[in-house]
Length: 473
Image (cartoon, rainbow, N blue to C red; front, side):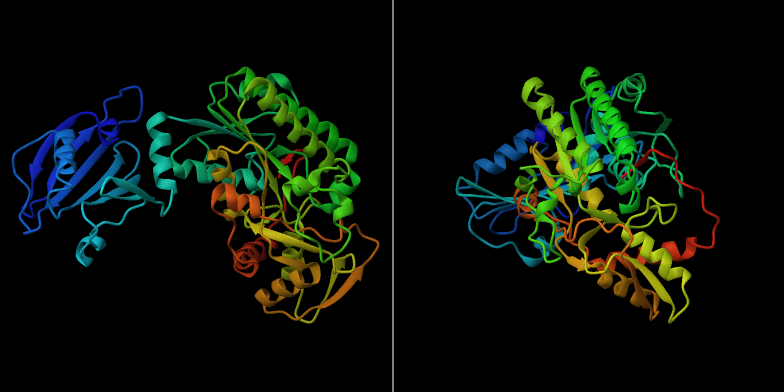
């Protein structure tokens, strides 16, 4: 495996500590050039330093492995890659620790080897101890392959954060939306203004793309999706079907669709103390009118593309997402942002209006966890829908109390029962997410809301630019 990663030895040297250093260069001029350094430390049971005689990497590693039954040895192998033309910091770091006999490494050596992925091999048996498959490894892989991704809805809240995350991971990112991001310039390498209801625009957007993160949608808060069924249904049906079809026509390798917890049956969400919703609960179907129905249809369309044409798709069902750089006014904002805005504008001991009786419940996920989950789902081998949310259930009244406490204010609640409030209760069952990814969103609501509130508080005095009609969820 090591020889595949670093096929050609450039230089071999030995430092004063007896540590052999072998520098490799991956020769692929059509792609990003990576410099790989392999450090092999080997000492026998008497502490003797390794031989200074130069060997090829394969010979060195092979020789050490062949001695595993004859000496009390420990080999520490550290591999670091650095993309020469893009980053100053190491792009990824992996270490392999090979104990030849059942013996713990000295503390000093254990401290020296800090792996992202550590293997222990002893007596002919291999044990893989997965500490993390973190961003660094994928970043190196992406850059070395020049992977180009498309994020639709890149001008929206989640899409904007996703673009930033993917760029940091090393991907070449094209962003597409009907509008530019509202509050901050996009980090995308290329940003295209396009109306994805038009199939021709979708063909252009998906040309020369390896992977598509499809987040573009006509959506908003409960007020908007309750009063705009026709617009939402026709706009999103066109956007979704055209983007999916164009991606397949252009040879895209993988396609992720952002669905919603609005696909879940309303008959399962009639009580505030709701049973967490499992992925299989979507049928028999009774989704949210308009928005939920078109999301459920698109989920099935992804399924059919995978089953009939072997087109790799991923489906993520978002539960409520909040965080900085999202809409907080204009009618399309979600509950956390709307309440943050109201609290920020109110003086202490003022009255705050709450839609509904305040007892309706939801779970809320900070956008950083959402973006991490999206990426992990895309990288997984699981094609069926997956929930992405927290299982920290709170009422709207409790949400108001949390935000008021962050603001240091005491407020009087006034409930308006005439306003839309959605289902009575909705919570995410993350059992399948944990099973598939070995991960789930972890940020507590209070921790994530603090920076969100501060950002909105700083913004409320700035004249608002109204969102355009098609936005990303």
